[in-house]
Image 1 (cartoon, rainbow, N blue to C red):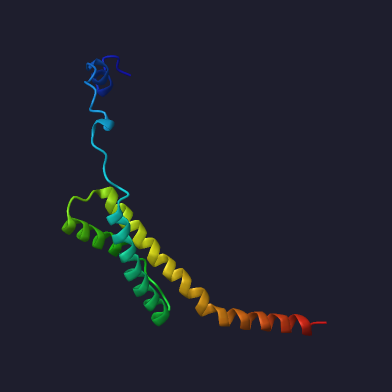
Image 2: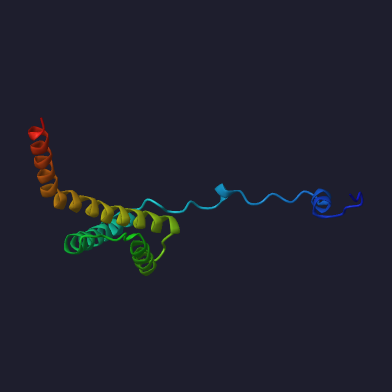
Length: 130
């Protein structure tokens, strides 16, 4: 092994202390939970939830609308102006949750007749066994 190593470790140790960076609390706070974020998110949740429920009942499967919700919310907030990435995150989360709730609401109702039929067959089998 060489004792005269002058690699990166030696350079890091010999550098003077860097000046401290700006502290995060000096920046103005970013808007996140705003009325318009909740309003746009709720509208998107209704639209995407209705579309997802229709697709689920018609085709028997649903899709995750998280990415369309993010893209639509970015477009809407850009048109309105003055939006932050945190506000866009709130809109996208509300819209995505709304469409997921619609998907969760339709499938138990479509499976309910089958479940009652399965239970009746199981009780028939259990009652007929010796």
